Image (cartoon, rainbow over all chains, first blue to last red; front, top):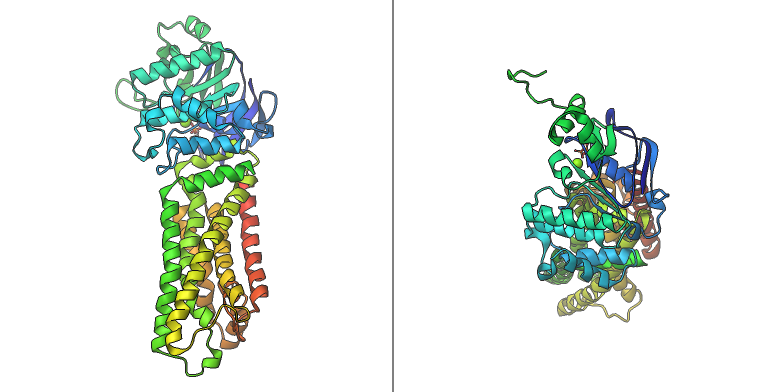
Amino acid sequence: MIEAKGLTKRYGDKCAVEDLTFTVRPGIVTGFLGPNGAGKSTTMRMILGLDRPTRGSVTVNGKPYAAHRTPLREVGALLDARAVHPGRSPYHHLLALAQSNGLPRSRVLDVIEAVGLADIAKRRTGRFSLGMEQRLGIATALLGDPHTLILDEPLNGLDTEGIRWVRALLRDLAARGRTVFVSSHLMTEMALTADHVVVIGKGRLVADRSLASLVADSGHSSLEDAFVDLTSGAVEFPAPTQNGSHS
Amino acid sequence: MSVMRAELTKFRSVPSTAWSLLSALTLIVAFGVMYAMVRVTRPPADPTGFDAVEVSLAGVQVAQLAVGILGVMVITNEYASGLIRTTLAAVPRRIPVLWGKAAVLATVIFTLCLPAVFGAFLSGQSVLSAERLDISLDEPAVARAVVGGALYLAVVAVIGLGLGTILRHTAGGVAAVIGFLLGPQMLTGFLPAELADDMYRWLPSPAGLAITTTAPGSTLLSPWSGFAVFLLYAAGLLTLAAWRLRRHDA
Ligand SMILES: Nc1ncnc2c1ncn2[C@@H]1O[C@H](COP(=O)(O)OP(=O)(O)O)[C@@H](O)[C@H]1O
Ligand SMILES: [Mg+2]
């Protein structure tokens, strides 16, 4: 369970996230949608205690993230799959994280197996493809067998097979009662993955509802249209209009 | 303790660590021998003021750059890749990460550099013995100077870590650690001679290096007070680094 109340973040005079209030419930996949620059990554960093909110607060499983003693057992996160040392192997990357939270070495081997990196677990990550890096990122998130998963654009750069694999994994985790919060800037990606969506544009909440009701109410045939409708007032760089001029 | 183990795993598992350490150890011995050779070809006019230990430990002053840069990179690498966010999400109190890195750096550098400094001393003395300028390890203060060389380098690594944590950027951190170790001495050149002499002994590197001398003379602080001053500089930088790590967004 993730609960954000009035979450606000300013960088200088730039407002990245404005007064966000929402709840992410366990047992379902919650999509976090918004165009690029909407504030999804910033929100996730605040949930993880990495960026300090300018105003408002957010808790994970009833406590601020930083109040958890061994946070990896509570929350698994993937913020940026490329955030690994190119000279270090997946095995040592995961081992160091496990040690920092008192997790047994066997967890490292388990997650390496689970994401299919066993063959290259001791190779340096420097030459990994984005798909391999995403798998390592997901292994990192799963390391502490957490109740809550927070994944920033985990489908980015994956091929069809990879996307299917991540989708199945997320649905399976939700089915086992975990809280799964996944961001994306593509509505089509979420259409097949999420049960519920929190949609933001320009840092503000524009929708927080089930995917089914969003489609039903939008009056459009496709989710893509519903998404564009919702966020059109909130996109930073509006698309050119029919005659080519900017609105 | 668990964070320290994690930091040791990280430290050991990248090839750049081994390369930095290897170059530091090589520099300690090679420059000690080379400087001893120079001094043999140009013996001092007055051998009473000659510090045979300091000569053989000249490599410490070259190796300090490799060691300081290693200290910087241990943290700035994480900022460059974004790994720091994963690290701090795993340890949200943050400060243990800094202590863990500092403890690993200081322990590893001291443990590996001690035999290298000792090797530099022995080979340096064997070179100096050609002109009968050598000194034995049994002489007073000689062992302290040799151990002091390794202690100095351990503190230099921690200073690098502090500067890297404050600046969060490899190029900036490397420039800062080189500037911190070598810059102030150069700047005193712009001051009146008497004032420059008074200030020199209080500057970070000269204060710290006093521990590697057996005849500190009038220009340096006494070995242990000098080292204490050096430790104060390191503590000040680490405090600033801890504040920066704790207060600012990752
Ligand atoms: N550290 C930062 N400093 C300044 N501006 C930032 C910072 N992080 C994000 N921003 C700005 O905040 C806005 C939201 O960014 P972000 O959260 O990355 O959006 P998203 O993940 O939805 O694409 C963007 O306009 C971005 O430029
Ligand atoms: Mg983003």
